[in-house]
Image 1 (tube, rainbow, N blue to C red):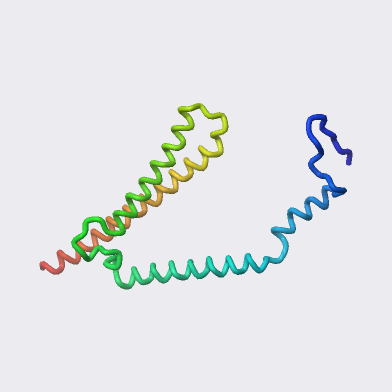
Image 2 (cartoon, one colour; image 1 turned 120 degrees about the vertical axis):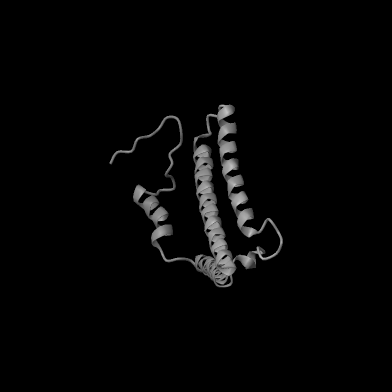
Length: 148
């Protein structure tokens, strides 16, 4: 295989390494055994996941009163969560619009991230709103049964 030498920049592979050596150095990170630090970080993330699963199960078992909805407060966790995700969606749109208005040439990757953030935030807000309606319908059904 012949090597093309660029007159503009220095060679990218130096130090007597071949392309095979560079490929092995890069693939070693993915194909090798996980390090001790990785295993610790994975263990911590599993603990965080288990805590989240416990909290979700506790909410399902006890009801949404654990969010503070059983008090005379208008803004419990569910509506706060919905407003949060709508705000994140607006932020992504704003970032994309500002970069477009200022005609930034480097905006492509940031726009993609901002627009993806907006799409995911709107999906989260929509699922949160759907869950709120479902809980409100259940509450109304229980109230109607109690009256009859």
